[in-house]
Amino acid sequence: MLGFTCITLCLSPPPTAFGRRAMLGGATTAALLHTAPAWARTPGSSDVNEAVEQIRDASVELRRLQRDWATYAVIDAEGRAGNIDAARRILGGVAPQRGEAAIEMARRTPLYRIDGAFNAVRKAAIDASAGAWLAAIDLDVFDEACERILFSLQKTDGDFYGVVFASKGSNMLAGIYKEARVQVDRSADDFDLILRLLREAGAPGL
Image 1: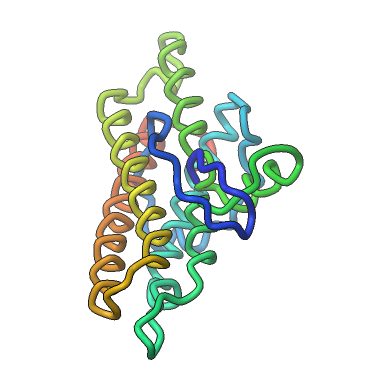
Image 2: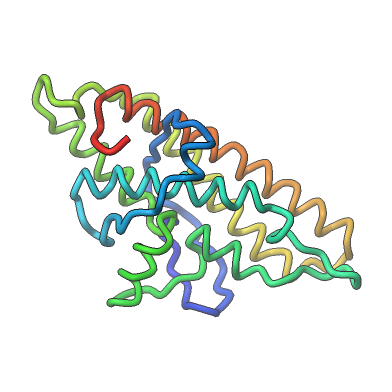
C-alpha cells in the first residue's frame, strides 16, 4: 500500500513520510467486498486505467482488513501481540524493494505504493483536456482525501509494527490496536469518497 520499502518477512519500520494524493469513492461495501482484485498498476506506471483499478482494489483490501479485524489485531493469553505480518502485508508495509518481486507484490497487494496510483490520476486530471472524464474530478476534495489516507495508512502500519515492542501487556496492546482501527475506518471512508468522485466523473471500470 503505499510506498513502504520493507524486506519481505523483515520487520523494518515504516517510512517517515508518504507520497501525496489518495482517491476516494462511494462504491457500496457489498460491492467492494465482492470485486475480484485486478492485476493493477505496475510500480512506476502512469497508466490511469491501471491506477483506477489499483485504487478500487486497495479499497477492497482495506475493507477486508476492517471486516476481519479480530483475526489481525491479536493479543495472546500472555499479553503479547500475535503475528503482525498478515496485517502489514495487506497494508503494504512488508514488501520487497525492487525487481520482479516488487512488481508481483504490487499486483497482489494494491495498497502497496498506492500513492503512485493517486499521483497518476491527479497528474492526468491536471493535464486532461476539456470534456475528458478526468477533467471532471474535484481535485481539491480528491487531494485532501488522498492526504488523509496516506497519513492514516502509515499510522496504521506503524501501530502494527509498534505492538511488537509494547511492554505493558494487554491493556497497552488493546489501546494501540484501537487507535489503528480508528485509522483503518477513516481510510475506508476516504476510499469510498474517492471512488465516488471517480465514478461520478466517469472513470472506467467503476
